[in-house]
Length: 422
Image 1 (cartoon, rainbow, N blue to C red):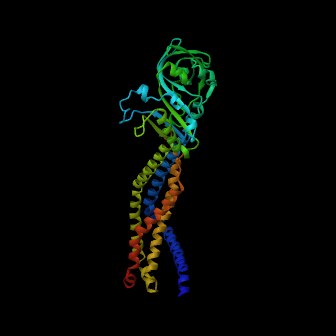
Image 2 (image 1 turned 30 degrees about the vertical axis):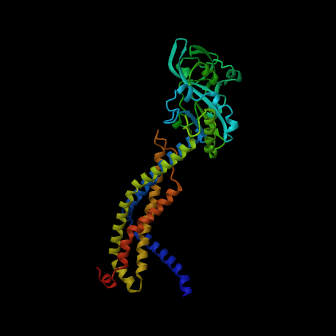
Image 3 (image 1 turned 45 degrees about the vertical axis):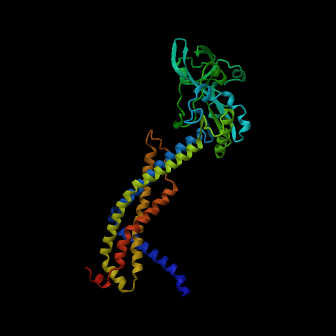
């Protein structure tokens, strides 16, 4: 009894091996028929993996842009609440962030590595006979360059004296230089804005972030020391903080919230009159959305696998019909119904798995074609390992599902009737 139990797995393994051999022999003997039967599986698997690869590549590209922009950043914006004492408060004077409200932030928020205040406004700008209207003017702190990874490519950045004395100096972008028709090297030239002369001390480089965050696109912008703008304009003030790592971004956000509630005099129980956005939260939301889109798109495309499954069932029924005498002969010499069931089931699974492997190859060719589509941002498209395993498992599942009925028909066949079959 024990010997029989121990030998049972070996017998099953031998039966599986022989069945796979017979299945491959049948596929090879009927190459055209097998190819046509598996065509639906090939197309279905190729379509599914191509869609998954395209979405995976797009997800990788967007997440890389998130990382470049800074997954550990926390943005703080003024925001009028829907309730509480500040719901009707004037924007300037109560809702807008005040520069002094950030004094001591680094001491009170240990998870924050650095921060910068920004004042956003606009002004008409003149240089000789050239006039530009409503150019974006940004007041920045020293730390702005490091936080946004935008450095001065020509000239110098603002000095301590520029900041302390609120000097009328500025940094410009190359687009601003070209639109104002300034010399190629505009350092030392003066432009008129806020009805005052500002001396150009440097050219700031474009953002290294991806296209989703405006990276690589040079805009018409001018940067001045933060105190300079505060004295000459009433800008919209916001702040950007960076946590020591993306893992502590949530803690940094909570610390900043507590700090600002104290410095802005918000009573306990009253809603915040500012809002905070943590980039790591946006990353998590995007990953969740991408997973949902991938599942839905993959599910829709995989409907073609059902069509392929019907083709497999059809060819297996034909195979059973053609081999009726063989089935009767095997039953007559003692073949058990389970052995016949396993044989035809394994043949169906083998047929589908071979189709799935061919589909993966076709899918890889489609992915290489997708990568070469210009301006599609799909150059990072790839087939993830889980998609390969899922495709093969799904192919096998289709083989089991649609091959079971033909296999059951063969297992239940009467040997006498089968031997009489012409």
